[in-house]
Length: 183
Image (cartoon, rainbow, N blue to C red):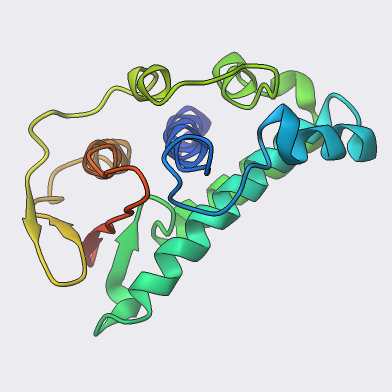
């Protein structure tokens, strides 16, 4: 998989993860990327360069934990994939990419640096505008959340964007799982 595709997926994940922090949509109980939250502590601990990347990993982990809690209740949960629990090879590529950015911070894309800027006082609408999502992503409501109807023929970047477009429809304080089954 190309680094540019992984960067697009990571960008989408970070936007939604940042949107889910408690100051904005309150989907997970974190404020690690906000200056008045954990970002200041991380800055003192890790420095200006690595602190935002550590915050990014923290918000991604919070989102992954939220998804995992809901996925664990589903039958055939090992075949269920989400924006924050993508297929194993994608997940591994994202982790490797974040590791690369920690070693070589100058390679971190500007849009990722911008999303993770602790001094930026993001609004939910501003974050929503940072990702191009399909307004026509089709899903079926299930007792577990919202299942994407079609993934066949789409690139993984398009699938992740469709998942993000559905997640963006969630209400404040109410996170509904957006997922697809099988690859």
